[in-house]
Length: 482
Image (tube, rainbow, N blue to C red; front, side, top):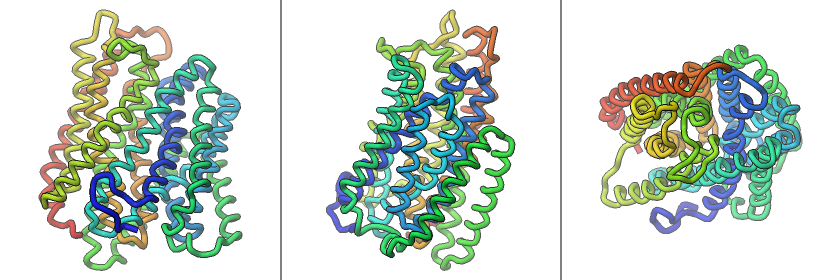
């Protein structure tokens, strides 16, 4: 499967099917994300604190159950079957939001959490199976794969707010259902391309007993999640317990690994811990940054009108531009016998995140106009830094797992990567509440002071962390083995 010509864009055929399925699935998720916090604040009357913490708990639960989905894909149903079942469940959740987002908000979000848990780890696990260990195309493949996520999210974040403005909240969310439906049809039509790829369970006859148990478990997760979103303190407690369980299982993997595998697994664990910081700040995009754009940013970019929620589309816009450039850069470095190590990429990604928040904080403090607003053009620059950092950390996180972990537990390790992100989402929500704006009686001039304090503090703290990570790069590189 891995025997195809070299080059930044030369990959096995199954890669491109997985690319397109992931793209449309992410269209659904990020379209919903673009609207959800604003829907809670503007339509349901949630306070900033409640909207931020509810969304963060939702995002955390979305990532928390990915580990279970990876296990089901590895051991029970197979990666392909689990991915398809997850897509069906996701479509049901988006459809329910589109039907009546006020009435069915919590049940729909619970279903989306369960569906994403089944889906998310398995396409990336399948991509990792297309390449042998040491294949120079892995970093480029996962960078391009990450671009698929951002093509879908850019389209959704640009389109859904416009549809919502003209046709209402239900219509905006229904667009997400359409994207998920396209992903399902795409997979059904071209599924034969993926037949040679999968976990061992994919090549065993389907066990109806296992399928029924998985469906029952999915229903239980959906119901439990919808309840937890109403009881946020309980949700956070369960997430932290889940993190401990995954961490214990990860340590068990390390102890059971062959001697030559252990160093890689330890380095992978360290990089996952570093990524928690990044993802906590990434969580500001749909929360504090989203509300900042609503209250303190002029709604245009270079004279082009932009809906407040659509400023989030700058993130995938930059990803689509930077991804192929990075993919070609990795290919050239590989051909020349040089390599920019994974620890080095993670450290640079953190420094880019620092630049993003310092830029926004400085501009908000020193360049806001007399009404307390800044130009939307500054968000273009800030999101550019953040997006480059995202590609170096999140975009290569999947490649890191693929490179540093044994294939026999790839699904679990992919799930563990997402579990660490889950905890980061909770922390990100707590950070966002530091910029909560009172519901009534506050002007843009007052709110901009709240936001610039948050963004500058984030920038300073992230800069220190990035420098520490940079200092640790030589040590971590020494222990990575192919």
